[in-house]
Image (cartoon, rainbow, N blue to C red; front, side, top):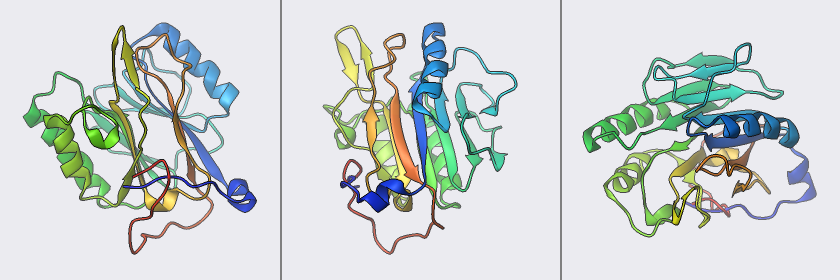
Length: 235
């Protein structure tokens, strides 16, 4: 799956959606910083795992376990909210079908495969899609030192979808001397146009996860490409 080249002036001026992705790990300070950062960075959508609390009076949707959240905090309201009764992930539609995911370490491999099957079977029915969250899985494909059983299952499940995977070597999880890349982002090829990047931010030291900022194009009717694109920063 490929990476995002530098765009032209015209590319940079087209409409885009700014998305923040974060595992708050039930941390109050990280929650407060999130609200502040949303304002400062002009974020349109936040995909959250393990929230500290839920925001009343906000377009804030959760799955049945309340540990996966989509918060529409910018200029683009929800067009609809679907499948929020599915444990482990939720989906909403705003021209794009978004999935906010959390697969806890407590999942057995059977639980994890079931989670992936439900997620990918739903995603196959829609285009374009953006899938993001903490999968607690390792694979060299997204910068891990090794590929574990969960990582193999993620790669196999997502190979059935027409999506690009973020790439990079900056850890998304840091605790003491330990670090890993467990927060992943998959998007349909048509959502990556011009100079649209994916980057790990260093704003959230209150949580043991770093925030991830990424952008998608929303200015044209999406079409499934005849073949996968080669886009810098994604693969």
